[in-house]
Image (tube, rainbow, N blue to C red; front, side):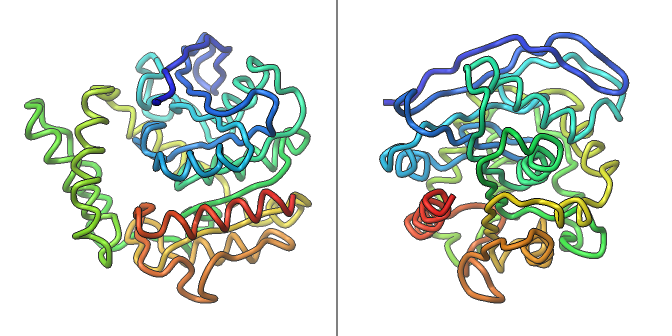
Length: 295
């Protein structure tokens, strides 16, 4: 059974705007079980977390909390100038959602891509709220690592066509561009279904991707701050990621004291692009659950 979309209004902060943010989130699992907050990435919705991964975490005895970041999915955010907020502001959104849910102590934090950056910022700025950290296909903010392949950003920056069929085809093409090449054939039906579900759930936020990219681009290098963390950490990255090179994952693991690297010492999750292909979900879930148990 699919969890329903829930909404809460929270205080919203940024350097240029303060107000109320209507945040969309979902809850799965027993409310008495340890909370796992999962934060998705750039221009991504909470449904982009693979449901089998969520189900395995819930089945292992955890409560999963997912939400749409500001300017994503069904979360409401008023249009603002291009540099409208920071990763730190987005991390604060997460703490306010936890407050709303009555989780005033610590939660396990799992973030993917930009969500990994937000999760790192959350662990740095609000260590009292973080029981463990899992950073997936992300990077440290150091411009010398984690760069994209040539032409990838240009494709991501193209506007989504207004026609529904063309829009879904456009998003599917983006999933194919940044996703696993090894598992491309196996993933094609899932990518098409996810592109359709994403379009049907939310028509997007005009300029939202630009504002999120600005939050990433204006963020400081987190390497020095990551070195101060004492939280248990796991880093997951694939060797076929064209959007955030695996060097960003290695840099993250090297920066956080005691952080565990998932998979092959150099290739990480072999065959994984900037996605989590279903053939790899069992292994990734096992790695995450072992990490949660260690914490």
